[in-house]
Length: 386
Image (cartoon, rainbow, N blue to C red):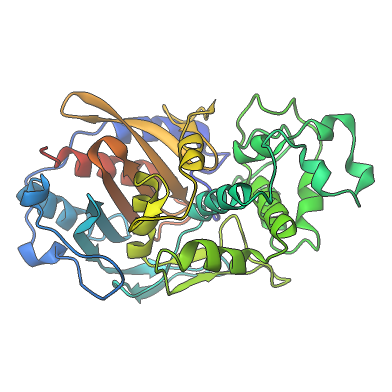
């Protein structure tokens, strides 16, 4: 979403949808060349090893050429990390223009394996993983629990319409609350940066329709989920994330940017290394495990990746804060799950190929970057031979 944390600007959806569909249908790129050393992953003692491209079933020549094309600067892509079967296969970085969630102006930055990158709305998918952990701990009940039950002090919000909104509705962005994000004019997500009580601002929005029926992109729902997580676990979001997710994944360097009152921006503030974003992908592919340790319950991973609602964007569906869709692989229709972030941030996982593709970029608010990185993902998948 423009500026901020979503996939496409709301006001630009109609114009961008055609662009997205066309880009998604683009044929794989070919005919480019790149130095064979360009894509060799670094070994930096963070739990990753590397494997040979050809031995891992990839067309190494085509993939290196594609990566060279992706990193030529035309789309301001900053990094691509590819892992398969638990091993890094390719890793590329470049210098490019970038800006933080608070910056109005972009500056050139030189990215590499040890550097953090904004993930923007990838943060939402990480919050979903944390909700799954807390639920397994018995801290959060059934997903049919009314959201308002977590806020007994706000009795004025407990109207029959709002009592109908459940945790599941927030997870699937189908609360039925009026919400405008990413378009021209007033933006509800922007207000979350400075509101003294973000959860109350979200839950007091007008009722636009019954919950659970219509998908509407809503970072405010993620903010409420994170607040509920902190209340239920009696642990600040950052502390819970560090102890329950990042430390078990051996993710040492990360940052969760805060709002103007010092609270982490649950819906867009997470900054990570692309290599660590790939760990999130491998965690999902391994049904919540990392190196034999169960970190996120397997049933939560499965439930999160189930299509719950149509998004109205191309053929994409939505689960529990995760995007879902198809990709063609040599005539077969495979399914992917993904964490999306504004500006071109992606964690794609393809279970049938046991593969993760991470892309980061700096094209924040550009309606063309989403279709382009999605098309590049398709190109990468086409280089898998077996």
